[in-house]
Image (cartoon, rainbow, N blue to C red; front, top):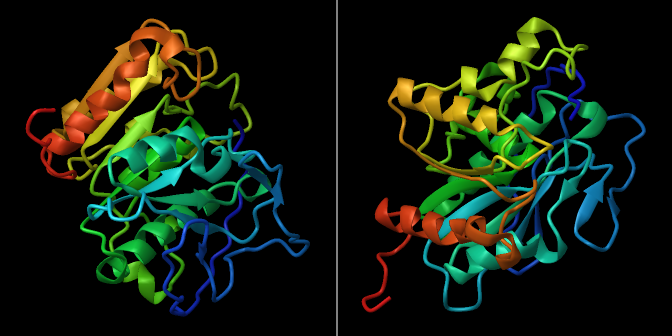
Amino acid sequence: MKLLLRFTPCVFAWIVVSHVSAAGEAIELWPEGVPGIHANAAPENDDGRGRYTNIHYPSIVVYPPPEGTANGTAILYAPGGGYQRVSAGVNGGIVAEWLHSLGITVYMLKYRHGEYGHPAPLQDALRAMRILRSRADELGIRHLGMLGGSAGAHLTALTGTLFDAPEGRTGAHLDSVSGRPDFMVLIFPMISMRDGARMSWMTDELRHRLSVDEQVTASTPPTFLVHSAEDRSVPVEGSVSFYSAMRRAGAPIEMHLYTKGPHGDGMSPQLGPISGWPRLCERWMRFNGWLPAQPSGD
């Protein structure tokens, strides 16, 4: 995973966007102008399988649960893709299907990546959180969490640790709205950027800033984390380090580590025990009150 540097300060005014509720409709993140947009910006590419590249105009795509099942919980979903693409699957993929089964409304984040580099993805994630939180009454949101896988989990953890960071602000009125998620779900997360061999181009300052285990404070949102020792793409040791950092800070975290399960979402029943993590996550959300209590008899 490579994050290229780009620091472009911009000051914009907030423009109200229209009400969005239908599946597949999008909320534009920067109607007043995308901070630091490339001069050669072109339409994004969609391969038809839910994988997006060349994103210059970030947005959140709305995927509501079946009619009549929404319960007031919403999740901003940051798919992975190594910061080279946004790979979710059609209509948000299997992750969205699972969240819909719980009555959760999914807002899928299509964030800038590739040559934009830090802090563009963080700005997009925080702007998305701020938009949703500012429109919570209109959209029927009572609880607003964030979930991500792989690089998307790194972005989720960045959002949860740097939600008040100066590089996440653009001078817009919405900066006054909290970008902190109520809770986070990290799936096979990229945590540390301290690997000098893989990230030798980074400055020490940026390597520290983007190693989310070094950014944890007592204000970091409660977190559910799942990972596998078999993951050869993202070291599981980073998740252990994040868990330890949360414990030191006194921030709530529940972590589930498994022996088997290649890098991915871990949700296929063929993978064995790790495929049970969604049920554990559901119980965690219900226990903490972000989902309604389990119906009697279940």
